[in-house]
Length: 391
Image (cartoon, rainbow, N blue to C red; front, side, top):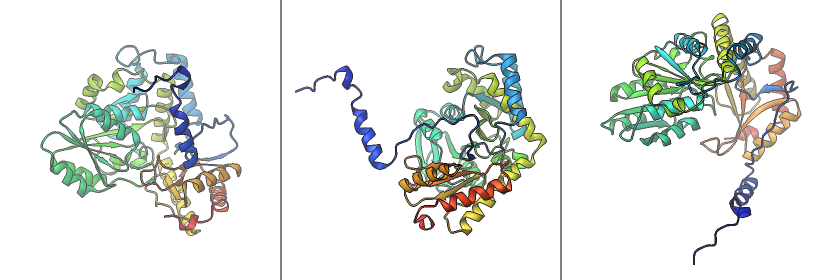
């Protein structure tokens, strides 16, 4: 007998079971609106250079909104491209060492654009197992054949690329957001060149921190501007704004303008966000020491926490990841830190591919010595039992 059709009140009844399963697993997520003047010491955001509230960044947003309006008013191909967008794209490309750039509404959209527009059903996309969800979703939407290789394994990449005769590309984060470790970009590029593949790198966590004056991981690896390399990035981390971009050879950018659905069918980045990002970029060019300071803070946090017995991954950029004994312990640890005046990130399954829960700390360039001391003391004082033995 066919099952009866659900009544309107029961159409979403299946959600009740899903909610119960999340509660039993300790994986319920909730929104926590923060006030404009939060008293918490922030080690949870991605504001690596401390520019989101910098007077010049805020002024850039304000001036752009006053001149261009609150919104872009349409997609980039209709009315959503202003002279400000063009200036930002030129500055990004020049600063990072690429021929051209294309600004989108988010870093997520940038990754979807790059992966889907540069592949098709006959393409092999090789993806690092530690890649961000936006890359994973880009692979799924591309309809290409996707092979997931072990994390940071250039030899596995080469062997996988060697199995394919047609078009291929290797996609990887430059700095992985969970543990803050850097990808072996030079070795990945060598594998791609041996097998005739393109390299696409998400430099969201490298821009502003790695490379000369914060020019990014690809610049540091000597790969910026290479004809077979494409970069994606976000404007919402080191630049303290909102939005994303794809950088690469001019013909690649022209191709995305004509084929990338997250560019063609999305409203352009708001002028205020473009103005803020441009102001931050110019500030970073004048003050390149901010990048080195972020790395210094990361090293100090890592050194002091591990010296006290906690387990943490050695940071290659501005992310310091501290292991917790369980998902529930990580959640309690983060809550205890918050009650003590410290905001930290909490990564739990399914956000972490290896199933290991962590506190995720942001090593901001504008943290003072006293703030670093306070953060370390709070994390150690609130550490749960077994934290020193976390895997």
